[in-house]
Image (cartoon, rainbow, N blue to C red; front, top):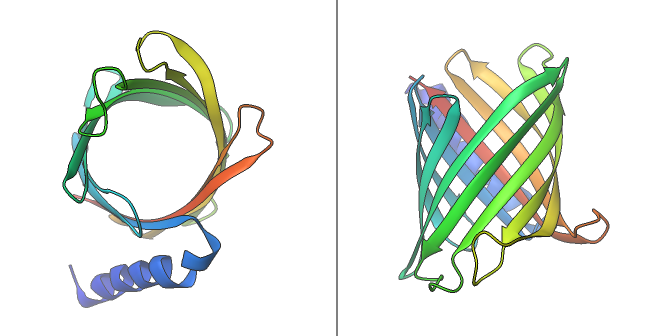
Length: 195
């Protein structure tokens, strides 16, 4: 990486943790390296667990394995999902994530299905987007017994700094099942490098 790229990564990290920290319940920095076949990322939030993830594709499905560590507590997640263009700037997708580990006993392991829809439009190097989705979460004693748990709204933008590096700002707010009552609001600044 050249000096300009390193300075940009450092500036993004400082902005995400200092400037916006007071306006959000949590802020995070996410660094991702990806190729056509694999991705690896680390996400460091202001509070909570640091996440390490590895992703790939299996046929038409995107797969991600995540290890998160919060102090001495280790948790794991396996996620499968797919996103596709619907018409023009509209896209839709769905994912299923199984979570287990130190914070989850046999009775509290969860499976969450998340369908979502969004709109994204590229203008030169900038691609702003808006997305909404639901979360259907399994009950604690039966991972196949689902109930609508909550929803979310997310807005953000990706800026292609170079052909191989992009910076993304995402603001995600959880909502209740009717999209009415706001929950936590989180901001994430990410840097993705393609190799």
